[in-house]
Image (cartoon, rainbow, N blue to C red; front, top):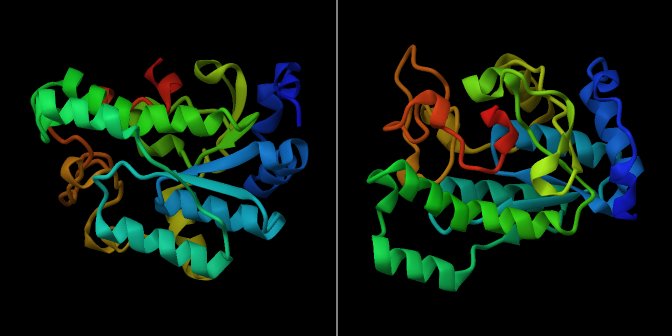
Length: 240
């Protein structure tokens, strides 16, 4: 599939009435092996992959191993591999960049400033994502509008100008948390067991905590920062 297909006009609004299954069928048919799900092994991402797999068992799935993940996240990776017999594409950060960052700024640099935290996310997440997306004409996420104040304007399909104008598909953008968990239970989708311990959103181990009753679902991510700053740089359009 040529990257030129992403340059064709796309009527973003026309996709808003489509179901998740319809969007994924369109994406997998249109882009073939040039589209992949970028998964953090979240409940949402695993639901999206289950939907994808039922359409095409050869659908691509990649994840970012930052080197600072919880063991429970690795457990989900293995559970997905076994259940779906999928070849999981694991992207790692550049070792030299990580070594230099740690030597100059320490292992826990992200607690000291937003700049340091974004540097760490940039090296451990953004750069590996960029490498993965070089193999894609489109990518799929499990983002939902109700997840965070930075995502309320999320559309189901968008042009990702930050990555060369490729297509970005958010098939469950309009789903509620209840819909996600109903699907997981009904279809026995593997999920991160930290969700059972009060972690609605899970990232790197030192930057994620359980949320307290009544707190926002994203309160446990980079809890020392203001809500409008809580993006790692993977989904840059949501900063608008």
